[in-house]
Amino acid sequence: MATLTAGEAGRPPVSLRRRALIELIERHGALKVTDLAERLRVSTMTIRRDLAHLAAGRQVLRDHGGATAIALAPRLDPEEPTFEVRCRSNAAAKFAIARAAAVLVKPGETIGLDTGSTTHRFAEVLRSQPGLRIFASNLRTATMLAGGASPVYALGGLIRPQELSAHGPVTSGQLATLWLDVVFIGVSGLSEHGLFDYSLEDSEIKRAFIQRAERVVVLCDAEKFGRRSLTLVAPLERIDVLVTDRVPPDALAAALQRGGVRVIVAASEAVSAAGMPPFGVSAAT
Image (cartoon, rainbow, N blue to C red; front, side):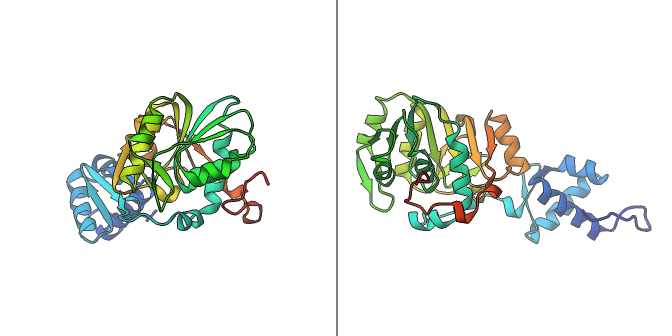
C-alpha cells in the first residue's frame, strides 16, 4: 500500500492519499466511505471528494455509500459464447471445480444436472460413480453419461440448437414431478445480486431445477465473479454451496455469507494440464 507521508500541514499529499484509496478498494473489492475515512484518518467529506475525482477518471466505481474496484464492477456480457469456446476458457479451473464438487455427491442420491461447460465437466468426473440417478437437461451431457456407472434420464422438451439444452413447458412439466436430492447449476455470472445466465430459456429450467432440489450447488469459476448477463436466475439466498477455484473478493464473500452460502475453493493449482482429460472424454478413462 502507498506510504502516507505527512506534508507541511500534517496531512499526507492528496496524490498519495488517493493512491492509497485505490489500493484499499482494489484489495477489498469494495469499501464504504466511513471505512475509508477511518482507515485513512480523514473526514468522510474528504473521502467523498477523493472518490468523485477518482470516479471521474475511471479509477474506481462510485456506488451508494462507497466505491467498488473497477476490475470487480459488474460487467455485462451481452452475447453467449459457443459451448466449445466456453469449454476452452479456464479449463483447468473447471476440472478442479468438477473434482471438488464430486465429493458432495452421496451414494444413492437423485441428481439434477443443469446445462453448461462446467456442469458438463462435472458430469464427466461423475460418470464412473455408481448408485446414482441422474437427470440432465443437456443432450451432450446425457449422451456422454449414457453407458456410465449410473443411469441417466434426459429431460425432454424444445432443444436450443447451440446449447443442445431442453427447455419450455415440457421440460418444466417433467421437473415439476421430480424430487431431487441435489442439483448442480452452471452460471454465466455471479455477483452480490445473484446468479446470471445468458438465456431466458435455460434460466427458466435452472429455476425449475432449484425449486425441485433439497440442495443447490453452483459451479462457477472465478472469471465469472462480478459478471452479469441477460437474466437474473436467482438470488444468492437460494444457493446452499458455491464451488469455485478462487476465494471470492471481500464484497462478494460478504454477500455470500449473508445469504448462508457455503463456499468451497477447489485446489486448482494441484491440477496439471497433463492430467486433465479433454472435454468429451470421461475423467475416469
